[in-house]
Structures are given as C-alpha cells and as structure tokens.
Length: 212
Image 1 (spheres, rainbow, N blue to C red):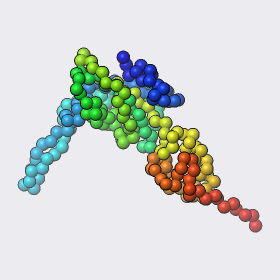
Image 2 (image 1 turned 90 degrees about the vertical axis):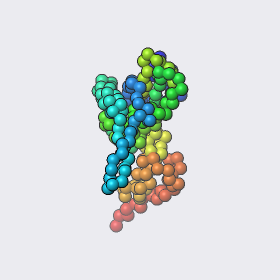
Image 3 (image 1 turned 45 degrees about the vertical axis):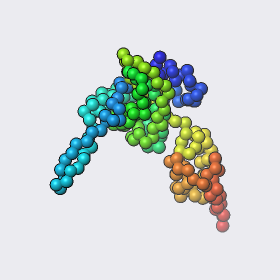
Image 4 (image 1 turned 135 degrees about the vertical axis):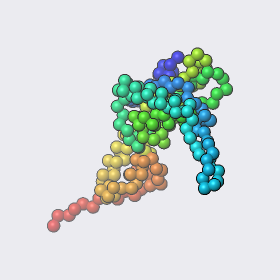
C-alpha cells in the first residue's frame, strides 16, 4: 500500500478540493529519531565548562540524502507552488516502521528540517501542519511516505472565497487605503475581536468627495 493510494481512499476525510495539481509525493528513508539528531560536547569557555550542541553525523548524512530526494521530486513532479511565508502546508505521512513500539512523533523534526534546508517548498517549517495518517510495519523496507499540499485556509479565513468576500467589503472602508492593520493581521492568521466571519466591527464607509 502506498501513501498516495491510502490518502486517495480517504479523500473525503482530507478534503483536498481543487489542489490535486499542487500535490507532492515524497518517500523518505527512515530518519534518525529526535534523540539522535543533536549531540553535545563539552568545551572550556573562560575557564568554565560549556555544553555545545552539534548535529550528529547520522543526521547530517540523512539530511543530505533526503534533501536530494526532495529536490528531485520537486523538479520531476513539476511542483509549482510559489514559496510564500504566509502559505501553510499539510504534510500527511504514512509511517512504515521496521518494528513495533516506535513513536512517529520522534521522527518529524529531522525530516522537516531536511525539507526546509532545500528551500524548495517553504522557507521555514513553522508553516507546516504535520499529520500522521497511518502506521504500518515493514522490516524489509522501512520508510515514510509523504504527501504535501497547500492548505485551503488563508490566514483566519477558511478559503480564498471567504478572504475575497471580506476584502471586497474592506475596499469600501476608509481604513483600506491606509494599509489596514486588521486586514494585514487577518491574512497573517492573527485572531482579532474585530472580525466575525466576513464582517469587521471597525468598518467605516469612505467619505464621498463632494463636488464644489
């Protein structure tokens, strides 16, 4: 079973909508767990011992290899979603562990950081909504199959249609031409008391220019 087949069988739950042309499928080898991501060494600083963090060789090797897989997938699959710091992404994963009693939460960090380092999908993984869809066991071929696609929501709005409706109302407000902070913050996903659905309590109609 592949992640694409697994997720397509559950498309009604995921509600991918019209984003099928902007979906990226990537298979990752099993990454180091978060416990094997960073190490610490002691150095002397001003005559005092200091613990310095470093990336383990195991993690460096994985990130280099997986980074090449990501870049190849982006180019081969024609990924065409522009990089935007406000664009969030779902990362759906099906885990194929080599054995039981492994926690999927321990394997996101190294994997997402490797994708971030490529700078081909997002600038920073603070825009990622990671979701484990299933866990299986495959001792012969442990891996993680990923499906990446943009979310429907934009800021605090459920979708682009709701944002367009809200902003079309904003055009008639005297705050709009002054780079309204309420609209700007809403697009950034900040919850504000002034906004209720597509309505803004601070709306003030523009004053019409009177002819002399």
